[in-house]
Image (cartoon, rainbow, N blue to C red; front, side):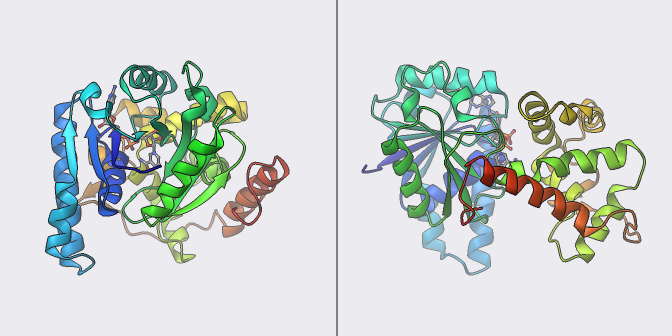
Length: 325
Ligand SMILES: NC(=O)c1ccc[n+]([C@@H]2O[C@H](COP(=O)([O-])OP(=O)(O)OC[C@H]3O[C@@H](n4cnc5c(N)ncnc54)[C@H](O)[C@@H]3O)[C@@H](O)[C@H]2O)c1
């Protein structure tokens, strides 16, 4: 398929980054959002990101201008998608919302356009449930921040056809990312599924008063991990983490429903980086982590064994090949 225009629906953390990497590959892209302030914030995010790339010498000033000129903004869904070849949804992780967006998109998009969802966890078939043509919906799961992270999971829903799957797989390669094929539609796909038990484990550590976020994160960094688990959850967004756990409790195991600690943080608007405070206060996109001794209550093997266990289940279930995992 000759891709001339892509639309990204949802101008948040992910939508803005996804649009930027697509524009950087020479493709015109429009970001659509229901809220005009989200579009203003998105434009600023992209301009700031491009200027950081210029300052660090990764792109030239004229590259930056060209990339910026390829990104449009719109709050009109019909106008944004009617002539698009690929429409990527990046709205919050709420199944009903995603289904509603695609029902609206289907009314105004070209019949041969390919639809993609950046959902972190929700089965593609569940999002495609009410579509007249579910075969054209593919999972296209970027990681945060999309401008930096190379991996993109390309997920086949129960009805996804090979043509749509290959179109998204090839687009991922064209924008310089590394695709992995997720061949079976399962909650959390590969990467998030492997780390799902950790989200619960780290919740229960706090809920049962075993240790503090700063002690555990200091321990994680002492083991050469780039970010501790709590700093990472703040970065991703506590609301996104909670949506995932709620979904896993319905689809994978009721145990995921035992975590109540993060829900309390949402009530206090402590969503992490996006609200300026989560487990930590955030300033200039950096977490202020109180200095402390590393936790002696956790071990690296606690984390690794949870991950390996889940990876084995994915191979046994035929979700992805050992090579891709
Ligand atoms: N944050 C992460 O680390 C991360 C990583 C990978 C995937 N994801 C997934 O990407 C998706 C988006 O997450 P995010 O972190 O960018 O969220 P976000 O809250 O930063 O952005 C969501 C955007 O969607 C917009 N929106 C809400 N309702 C809309 C509607 N009806 N029409 C158009 N726009 C609407 C909001 O205004 C907001 O700008 C979620 O499915 C999430 O699970 C997130």
